[in-house]
Structure formats: structure tokens, C-alpha cells
Image (cartoon, rainbow, N blue to C red; front, side, top):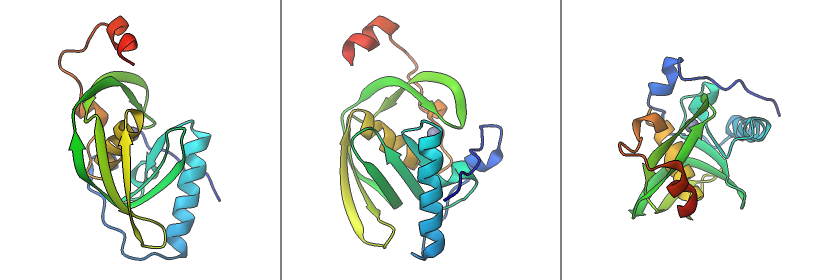
Length: 158
Ligand code: ZN
């Protein structure tokens, strides 16, 4: 395994659309292993391949419950709304209140190419949306709440 460099928002690659993964081979496994190591080393809860300079539809995540690998992920259901501060490894030190669905259902392939369905609420739903947005060149600063609440209210709502 190897650490990869995380690109920051000045890099135009973050605005590009990632391509689907078609080959479930050793190269994909290597990239997933590297992304996992890079995410944990950066104290992130999620990382998309584009953030390490690879325009592939791949995400790794760990919101504290379990480690998840998503290849070619798609949001197939979403419900409700939630508001909370969000950050991004590619936009270090900046945290703003964003709007996300309260719950989402995601389908994705694993490193062997098998399709699985994942459900998330709270931080996990937020993370699924944030990372899958990266695959389409969308950053969390595109999803800011135009009317952010005073910080006390946000804390009470958590
Ligand atoms: Zn991000």
C-alpha cells in the first residue's frame, strides 16, 4: 500500500466527471488499498478517487461504523433533509453548513464487481452524497445552506 497525495480545490481535476470502472482487476484493488490508507492517514471519513488524481467512479468511506468501498455508486433513493457543517479533505480548514437528504439508499459494486445496496442516515447519508458528488465534479461548497442557522441551534439539533 502507498499513501497518495490529496489534491486541493485549486486543482481543476476536482471539477471533472469521473469515468465508470469496467475492469475489476489487481490495479483496482491497489487503488482501493491506497485510497483506504490515504483516507485514514488524513483523518477523513470519506475519499473519492478524483481526490487522489484518478478520474474513476470509486469511493472509500468510514463514518465510524464500518469501512465501505463503493465502485460505480449511484443514489437510488433519498428522503428528507438535514443541515450540518461539512468539510472536505480537498478544502482543508473550511467547514460550512450544507443541505443533504436525511436518508439515502446507494447501490454500488464491490472490488469484485458484485452489486450491493447500502443505506445511510445522518453522517453516513451526508458522506454518501458528498463522495458521490465528487464523481460528478461537485463540491460541498456548491450545496451550502443559503440560510445557515446560528451555531447553537445546529448543535442542539444534533
Ligand atoms: Zn470531499
